[in-house]
Length: 436
Image (cartoon, rainbow, N blue to C red; front, side):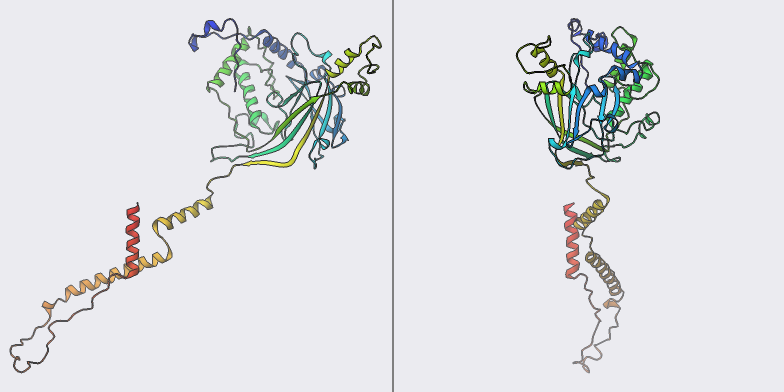
């Protein structure tokens, strides 16, 4: 969240003052006027606010989609009232674009009617606000969108971007519903979940809880609270400033996670002068904006050619929205290690570092068998030593049996403790021990 500080004459006096001793700076007069107007405007009913804004037939003078007319409010447009921009019209249709390019996109011609703009500095800009968004969510013109100027033809080329994130236990911890938030029961399905909408509702409830009124710019849900009058001299202004400081210092947080599935649009914007000096009169006659129109240098009907041209050029604008191509840019998060990948990697590591294979298991069994066999043979050999073998007195038979060979002791077969395979196994074990 970005906080802007108004600069003024009193700013230098508090420059070297500690933060906790600084006095709250007052808003500028123009901002006070805007906050006072918003408090009055949002206090009206939605029907009254609709009547105060541009009507559809006066605002949208031409609409074509894929070369066919879409100038029907009931069939193609949804109306909402926004506190910052008044009447907003959302184009919605089941028809699809199968060919990229401007000729098969959405084209509209708008009339701003600046003569009916609010005075007293409440309408310092002229133009239209355009938001391209997915059909699952409602538009947020305050946070998103493009401002289109009069006397221009604006071309907006789109590229669809789809982002997919992972839920817990992954660090993104994304969400698809309001269930994890503190506001799920109060939203009650009024909006599809999005992190931006969640932040707005979080701010709305924070203002209502502390200040007992709603911020005029954050009244997404009808809760019955009156709009706050946030002029510098009001108590609501001090309360709202304290809340914003709590969010800024992270003493107050919102339970809003990122979207698991998000669709956005990358835009390429180009503009050209429209209408030209040779075309403005055609538009004036087409939409009956002036009584008579002739491109001439002389005066007619009590009005000059120059004044009528300025009126048309300062109030008309054209918008072309189309897909640059039919490709979709996809950004998808995936786990580095899935369960199957982890088990496979673990088995490979065990085979590499410990040498646990079927052949090595057979060699271990063979080594154990030979070791036990060798121990048994060794024990038997000690039980039957040569000192316990019968020794005859050969001196008595020396002359009689001089050439007779007498076997004094008996030899047991010597065990073969290790073979080449066993030595190979033992050497592998020693190498692994040294490596670790």
